[in-house]
Image (cartoon, rainbow, N blue to C red; front, side, top):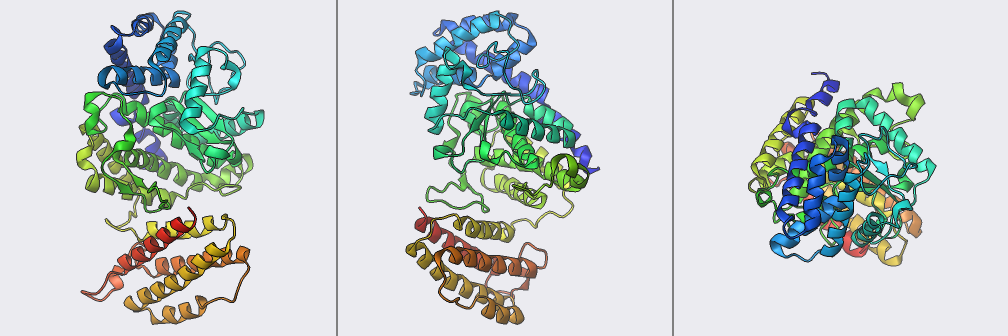
Length: 506
């Protein structure tokens, strides 16, 4: 198959057909409304109005982030008596107001209401609208703002026309490259929130959560490169598509009981080796998050491959792919997808439901067909060194201090020694001698320069190891039989340094 033909492949089957996924999600939420209708009269009124409403009204109401959140909370309250962030009586008021909204036959969601000046990402019938604070005086706006601020610790940012133009430009690019995939994925996103990238939002490029399905959030500081915007719109919209699928299928084994649950309680953990291991172990993912990432990376591998291939013909319209903020390289997307698929099978398989297992099989078959040169099973050297370099470059943003400079000098010595030992084990004496010169202790440097020198040293170590690996993924074939594993030695070096840096920069 041609690479572009996988756009259609990822839009078929029960796992890729957005029309099917949406219909099943609607059925699931109708069942949930039915389950609470005796104790919550507003749920019965809403269910009655939905039965008489047109398809577009139903689509927007059952896709509305606040409506779904209130239904989920009322179901959880009724089934397990779980304490919720929004009081049950307020959730009931939202459903009552939603029933009146449905009765009016509006083609927009309750959060947007009948506003005529709303901004849309694209065609209003199937793309998300851009959140503004214009609705904060009614119950929908008030409750949503309270929930969002409680959930994320800070309010959303009022979008500008420049923000809107950047989002629409990225969406047009996405549709040109992946028309079927983007059309389907964006139909699962009903609202885009823009945040300022400061305070609690700092460091969040884009985000979405299973506890607030239908809404995605983007950092307005990063809406500069259309290629980056297109990638992150696709990324977050795909999360919404998976969330809609999970709301109606046994993605996880525990989903069979249909009780809304916080996905963070997953017992199993997949280590995302390319991410920095913070003290809170944020790079250790539960089954839900690992599945969501696998789903996204398979699609991103296709999108980024097409973007890189077609970038020259789109240069005049959209600029270069790598400036001012680069996309994910397609090779990294492929490699991460393979690792996550392998990890889901090896670590999380019994926590996946039947639908989740079948989805892994489906995505893996497409991934294998797209990638003619997959990494060997079990390889991790490339992922660890990706983190190793990223970690050093992020350190350059840290405020200079004597303590940090001391930690970096200590790590430079330890990493240089570990690197030389690895070179000796794989029999690369020439590189061993070169390394002794390149990694020799540097003269005393000012704080600002020391972070740059640390990053340069790590770049050299990473590039050398990957160049020496015969297949680009492992050094172990160069090791003596029954000798130590060079890959494990590199892993020990990277993990030890990461732990020390996490403690030093906490």
